[in-house]
Picture 1 (cartoon, helix red, strand yellow):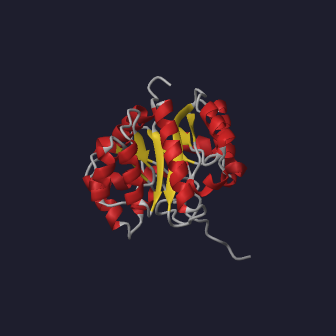
Picture 2: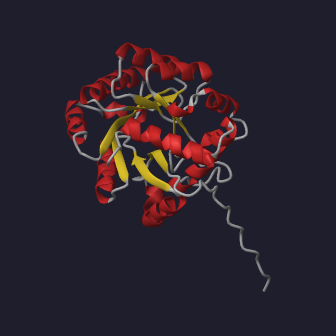
Picture 3: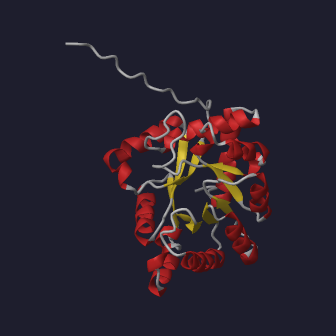
Length: 276
């Protein structure tokens, strides 16, 4: 029988003793994680990813996110309806969204926004429900988690008109240029960097990371999507956040430990995690 050589395991970057990371945007309730959910959490912990925010994209996933957060001290939840899913939203749904946000493990409202790539819902409905959810987040004094795909100007026009945002917010999975980043920062929002920053052709995002102040950056997996190099195309998970952090450190000419320390401080501030 012909022998096969086992695949060599790709080592994770090492953040150093005591350095911790927060995955600020993951979809832990999705079916991609069901088979090895507990092991996934252990791998994250062993890698130094000490807290995870699992994100709602509709009413059902928001309920599931809260359920996962209830069962684990280091998991927190957000509540909201993604632009793909707004077509069925009614008044009763808004009442339930508001009720769900009262849960003590809910730390933000979202993800909400505009998506002009998929257009699963008409643009007019996307704008209507984005506006309503922005106002709900402001009413509840929750940070806003914003989804933006090819809708930069409309997103910013709506946010700038709706502000100010005393609780802040974050532009999830940032995909703009430096000029767009400056508009986001002027709102008082943070900018979340996904594994896309490790892709060879992500020059615009990489340039933005070089320019955005470190104290305005947080990190995310958007798992199970957008795994960083060298796992591109595979399922993403919280432990792989280390590769994103390493790339940010490289782009800024600083250590991985410094990126971990500051982005964790930023996430704790943004999501009110101090002492939680």
